[in-house]
Length: 113
Length: 209
Image (cartoon, rainbow over all chains, first blue to last red; front, side):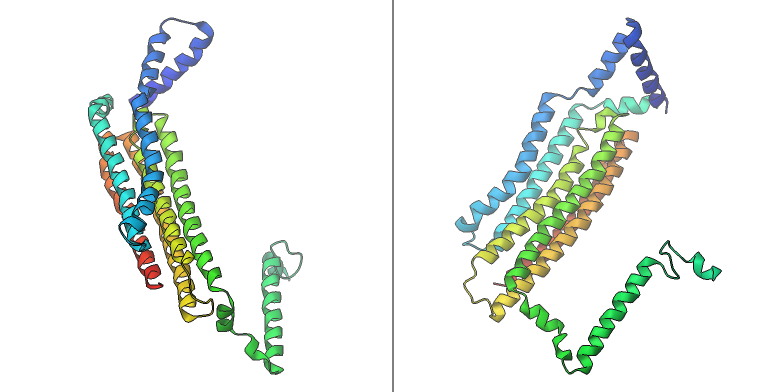
């Protein structure tokens, strides 16, 4: 609860700093901006998995339906569903690994509470 | 009189407009049915003849459209709920946003299931070499219709389930970072039930060769 109050006070100082241009609020505003900052690697990873979630299952269906399953659409559909789950599990693994690299952020928030 | 006016919903009479419409439609249908029955042409009111008079292609295409439409509706509903909670909670805790995009991907997979099933149904529809009035064509039409409806309804409810649990995951992660994995496990269980409809849809549509 204290972190919420601290954030509200920080935003009020930012709002007042627009008119008064005090130098003391610049450090706090840069601190909040660094916490909002999202790295370009995260955005690239999200864009890759979004495109992969659409492209990979449908490409799996159309590449395997004639080449491996002799036109049986049921088996090709099953392989496409499996490919969708593979992309999903890959994104979950990538997100968890990225979260463990940025490790102490939730711990510090919990200590503030 | 006063007791009647308390039940009035603004229809301007003794009955509300909706109940008047219901009674009017019911009595009109009863009059037409009694007239057809008493004049010797009651056999025209046949449900089975209506089902057989509809083309099997109609049933197949209706199943395909219901499959992909209901699946995309469920996925959109889930992304709507999850995204609203995620943006709202991300205002106070910006660290949760990138990690909770997993919930959005979970909702998106439901739409991909419906898309895959629609492609499979379309492949079964296009290689039709039989005559349109054969029993195999009718069986294929009914099988594709009910397989599409099964897959669409399962994906609709699964999308809502994943969306609501993903919303809870975002709110719980904003409060305590250790709760995210626990709610994510429940979300994975919710996303698995969409696979059941996909499996049954594949089995039913696979029977109608």
